[in-house]
Length: 500
Image (cartoon, rainbow, N blue to C red):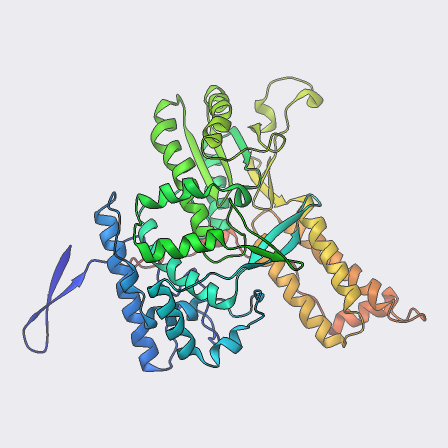
């Protein structure tokens, strides 16, 4: 679709594409440029770099427009859009402070010969000579005491994955449904939480199907993923690169292990591939096949591989609960038998007169929060959220370990780091109704700091009386509700724009 605009200079007509509604601006939802002061406004800098960014954005808009107009079209020629300027923009969007891969190369080292590196990467990518290096295996603790495996690519691999993800995102953002919130431009975990809160409140109580996919990123079937990609992307150069990333080995403790299934968590393109997989397995199936057969209302809220389904009818909830394992089993996935459960999520007065100990639990967990019914200040029942006990315990343990390991550093440096940690915690967990959990975390930080400052030497020179005086000088941030529903209601709506 085109619209014409009369030129003011010479009277000629110029054409511009109508901007698709679902493509995010490059400055939103991506890593900020290194050295920028923040915000989404263009930074004043090299004019050629800004022009290259505009050309890249124009290419992505064109791809998105074609994908929007042809919902079932498979793209066979996409790699020609990925020139050196495109890779330069992908480099600008790539996180610079992440962990290094197997080669140990940092972003700063890659920047020293940036143009030569991008030119070499471009030639290898287009000619088929690019070889995906193995990812560096690492582990981080999970909330249940187990370890979560990660695969960290090299920095050059991250740049190329970012470039391919930019192209795929332009296509699949036209297909993804509103129920998907994870790793998408303009969407976040808090958007999923708000959608869940509104849905539960509108239903006035519901049945919640809480689902846990067992080792999703480790068991993702490569053949099924390739079949899903065939429906929209058949460009040989891009598909060859994706296959190389899927087959790249994991190097850990000097041992190289090749995968036959799964995609490593930690890769730039892994979240997008996971969204494509679950879009076909879950989102489309639920909207087109399941909802038309239900008697009541139902709402799916998904963030990456974490999701819940809300039902107004208990019969509908049990039917979907029974069929969901078979649906996922068709695509090589399994649901956790203990963590997948059906919860009658209603205000306490709506579950009948059964004794309290015989009633089903009325809480469930999603995205780090426990959801439950409680009395609001108005006296009415409302859905409340608070930090999951496991998450709060894990955060407090991490603070204690940090204070122990850094107790001999100068006080100003300790104070600066602890303030950043407290603010970062509030930036995610600071939602309406969660003030008590925020205050509890703040008290944990104070206790841990006092304890390990008092153990800097055998003289025990930091009792609480002295520590309170120290807090007067080095005060920690107070608990703060960052994502306030009351503040959102009082703020005026932003002006509408054609560019979204």
